[in-house]
Each structure stands twice: as structure tokens, then as C-alpha cells.
Length: 418
Image 1 (tube, rainbow, N blue to C red):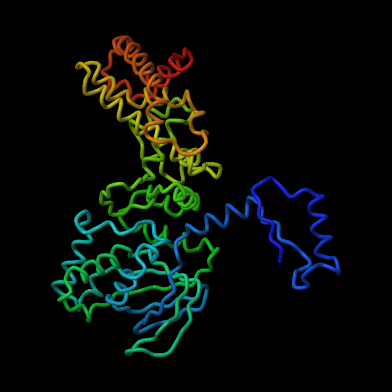
Image 2 (image 1 turned 180 degrees about the vertical axis):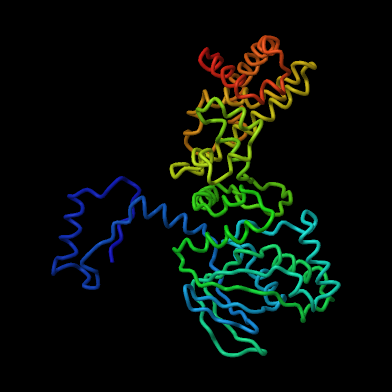
């Protein structure tokens, strides 16, 4: 088949007619050519490029002991699985096994729950089944196979742990760091549900089962397909986008952006003059997927490039403003500290064109763009706040946390310009 790949808007009608005539000509040079041709345009190019950055699906065999089957309303199996088997799966596939979960492994040192899992395996491995909440997984295909070691073997395609990520990863960490420990008697309850690839039921189960755990509303942003699209787009610029909570060890030379970075940065480009108060007082609202703020920021039109540029500008502006705060006198220092989001909003929002530049800004380019306007807005806010604080009889903290005082303050400065 002839494939015409292009990144222009369309193949002209004339070109289309010539191609069709050529392919349907009885005298065409190669009879193996199909009579039709494939128009592989920009949409297909982007779709296939993004697909290259997708996580590799996990296909594996797993033995379930004492298995029980439920046919209706969804094919489900539940029973006991070996801790060692699950740990081996995580060792082989890593975070791909947790792709549909809201979190990756949080590490041992930062999680009391994960420390407790280590202790249980060390002190009473045979009782682990009773001490664990269990694991929930989904798979696109569940194929029962023959018996194995007293259990039933299943062939699984598209396997993902949607609840119990910390259990599985902590068990693997324990086995890897204490190879002499015997965990052969350790098992955990598993619920395995067949969910078609395009079915949103898996996300519903993930949300429901994780609501029972101490998780932030922001964690559920991991279930938003927009976040995964942004991760794939940013990967083309060698930027790691972390939209799931995970253990984050500093790696020199790695360019990474967190979802928190993205939310703060994008908010500072939003036209709502109440944003500085939201960032100062209730920043968690930005990542509540049920709230209007999240929908403003992470919309279908948002590109990875815009996220990267917003974060570059936000980080550089924050760094410069932090230096100004350190060098300032007592009163001025407090204005910069508590009014920082008002200053950043005025400096960034007034230059929204920065987000639409070609390519991704380097930190140096972001610094050059910001240098003059940021300094000008910093001075404007300092001078205006010095007067308004006296008039309102408030300190900088109380003033900039209050929507009634901050909104008209930034609107007045915005409208006057620099």
C-alpha cells in the first residue's frame, strides 16, 4: 500500500486524483500495489509519535491460590497470590506494572506504611496475608490455564496494579535488600478484574478503592488522560513529567517537572486576579480534579511545550524574587515574601505571549525575558503595598491572604501597567 506521510494541512484534490488514477491503472508498474492509498497526515503523525512514549503493557503469567470466579457483572477472580511472585513482577516491569495506579512507589524512608510492610515480612511472614489490605489489579485479557503448585495459573495481558502499589513495591524492596529472608510463606489477597482497554471502569475502581486510604485529592489527577498526554509530549524534549506521587531521588542532569510545578506556573498565567490569593492560601484547589481551577489549567488545548515554558519562567522568577527577599530590609522583605504571588502574577500574566514561543525556553532565555518586567513589577508592588498596608491597617501576611484586599490591589496595578 502506498502511504503518503505529511505534516501539511492536506493532500490537494488534484494530487489525490492523480494518485488514485495511478493506483487503479491496469498498466501500473507493480501489480502488488493496493488500489487505495493511505493519507497519513498530521493527526496520525502526532498520534503515533505520542504512542511511542507510552508505557509498555505488562503481559505475564500469575498463579492464584484458592481462586474464586465471578462472572457477573464483570469477570473477576480473587484469591491468594505469592508475595514473591508479585515482587518478581515489579522487579521485571517496574512502574509499568503500576501504570493505572494513582501513585508509584513512595520509598521506604518517607512512608510509615511501607516501613510496617517491611517489619511484617521480617517478623511474621506467614501472617502477612492477615496483616495486609490486599491488592487489586485489572487486565485486558485473563486466560485461565492449567494448575500450578496447588494453585491456578492465569495468562494476563495489560496487567496493572490499581490498588496496593506500596504493598507490591515494598515487598520487592524488602526481598532485594534482604535476600536471606524467607518469604515463601507470604501471600496476599488479590482481586483481579477484567477491564477492556478503553473502559473507564478501571479508573472508577482506582478512585473508589484509593479513597479508603490517606491520599490527597491531588493524587487523582493521575487518572486524567490529559496528564499522560502531557508526559508523552514533554518526553520528546527530554523532560520528565511526574504527575504521580513517587519516591524522588535527586539525579544530576535530569530535567524534571512535577504536576505541582505545572499547576503553580500555569495558574500565574491565568487571567483571574484572585489567583495570587489561591496560591497563597489554598493551592491544593489547583489539583482538585473536580474543581473549576483544575479544569482551567489542565484543559485539552494545553500542550507540553506550554507547560515547560510556564515552569521555566516560574522557576526563574521565583529564584530572582527569592534573592530580592534575602537582600531586602525588614518591611520590604515581608512584602516580597507574602506578596510574591501578586508580583509573579503581574509579571507573568502581562506577558502571556511567552507561552506560545517556538520550542522550549532554556533557563537562560527565561531569565532574559523576565529580567526587566519582573524588576519593574517588584518595585511597583513594593511601593503600592507600602501605602495600602497602612491604609488597610494590615501586615503583609494578612493583606496578601485576603481576597478582598489583594484582588483590587493587583487589578489596580495591572490596569495601570508598568
